Image (cartoon, one colour):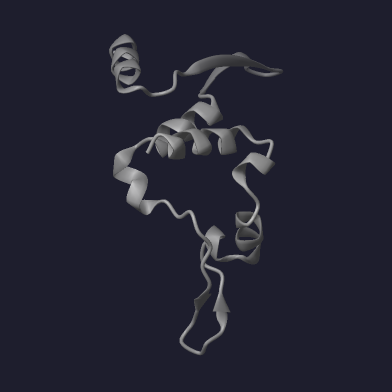
Length: 105
């Protein structure tokens, strides 16, 4: 079953699972599995089904009394300040992935 899932995930373009081990005093060596987070983010950003749900611009939200609300990451002041810097100004692999995806849209 594990081999079949590995084949299906590979064909779907999913990032591969990586196996690691940790040594515990009581239970001894235990396996754990993880994926490369940068590859996972790139995979998610390339999914057309999710595209309309991504928020790329900051926005200010207000409640019914006119008070500022902070409901999501893009509603905070940090997002608006960061948005004015260019994506090339950052030294972040995620920024490079986003720039590459945007260039190919």
